[in-house]
Amino acid sequence: MDFKPANNIQDLQYFGEFGGVNPSISDSSTYTFLSAKTMFDTFEGNAEGCYLYSRHSSPSNLYLGEALAAMEGTETATVTASGMGAITPVLLQLCGSGEHVVSSRTIYGGTYAFLKNFAPRLGIQTSFVDITKLDVVEAAITPKTKVLYCESVSNPLLEVADIKGLAQLAKKYNLKLVVDNTFSPLSISPAKLGADVVIHSLTKFINGSSDTVGGVVCGTQELIDQLRNVNDGAAMLLGSTMDSLRSASVLKNLRTLHIRMQQHSYNAKYLAEKFENDGLKTVYPGLQSHPSHALFKSMMNDKYGFGGMMTIDVGSLDKANALMELMQEQNLGYLAVSLGFYKTLFSAPGSSTSSEIPEEEQQEMGLSDGLIRFSIGLDADIERTYNMMRTCMEKLNIL
Ligand SMILES: Cc1ncc(COP(=O)(O)O)c(C=O)c1O
Image (tube, rainbow, N blue to C red):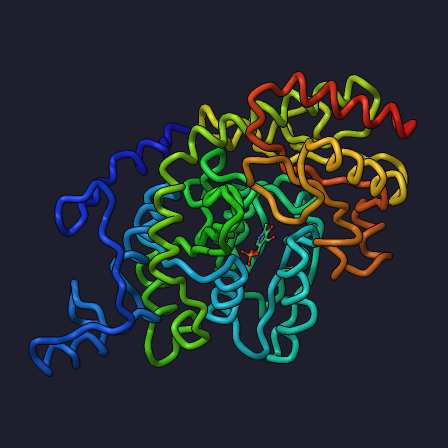
């Protein structure tokens, strides 16, 4: 593939109101109109370049949205107050009562909980499937199905979705393929592989400094207009609007994403290879042993590697907890959920971010008690980090 997402971001030039090198931040929730007629047209969605009210859009939010649309190669995008604030309006816009979703079973726990526990209250049912098996996905599609939902690299098991294959299925059955690309920004460009909608939790790699939550929906102008419609748009009416001050700060961080992703990927690959050689059960899409290594390679853009996420299995929850506490004591990172930070973050997903998934389902999907999920940081000397982590593991008889 010849898609260059970082070039697309770099080529965006936004001047501030007074020639500032960063665009001016819009510090208003509402906007004046010089004529009443323009206000009416704006309500109808017909007044290009006019702002109505900041829950609908603001200059700062549009700047960030357009930068993310450029990154994903979609017509446009809309930013939201959180990743869940992007996911839930999209699902509710695309599905109504009596309709059906086919979703990967290995997805972020919050998305899983929404589809499993909340959406049925609105008459929306979901079948959870092994997304790596296209025949299983196809068999789950019914005449009521409207959406195929997956993560390009799944949380927390790092399964890789065959986006081209899923897009073909979506076309065949007239469904929308919605892909959460939070784990693999820049590396994978789902829309270029046929996805209809690409979602990110900006909270993670894209913002990169663990100081805010945020989200984005990238898609066609038609879908984004529907989401923002004042009469029946789920983003507009559910109100998960990003604040302009925040979108300005996320936009500045987006400018360094390519360098950060390179370092996250370099460091994660280094550690994954070392731990696998040491005999630990290690999952990282950049390892030859990963069942979807070749698939990831076939989908990835040049330069950004296989991402910053890896897992190791240390055998039991007690051992996982002891190791995480010791690593935190040794200043190797933080025992915390979330990902994409400059410091390494680690958590045991079975008892944290995926605890919404019942135990027997966790076992069935291979989410074991001793699994530790790492979001590898930007450590300048990863060999030193490895040696220190190894010492912790030796102390606890893990190695
Ligand atoms: C893959 C993935 N998607 C979505 C979300 C939800 O994003 P947010 O926490 O910004 O609402 C998360 C959060 O952990 C995630 O890991």
